[in-house]
Length: 136
Image (cartoon, rainbow, N blue to C red; front, side, top):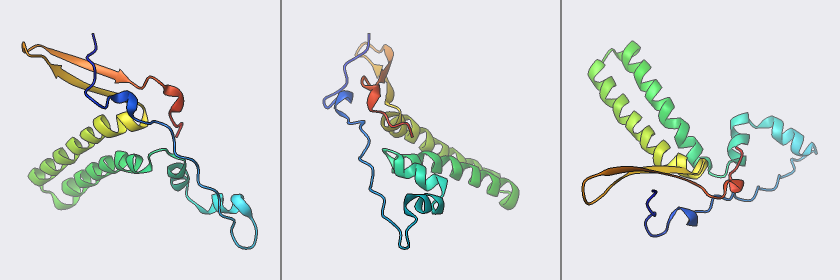
């Protein structure tokens, strides 16, 4: 039996994508084809995303953990500091994916509800209106 969310529940969060920005024509003609060809694929994807900063942080923590690991393991050869930094950034990545990316990008959230009698229940929720999710 799922528990009711706290005040300002999950249904009040808008999952609607922001309106697209109009394309600015480049001097000398060419229009959107030249503009699309001059931007990288990642920039184009972030422009169509409903939450571009969430997408950036979703990927950034994973990249940081890998960079710290490879630098600490193969360049610096410092096991303890590499382990500590990788653990900290992996924990930040987990928190970002669980609490931010999951809720904003795909409409999922979960938590562990501990009742007064000490029993624990895992609560899983999904966005009731999945039609508003952005495909990017």
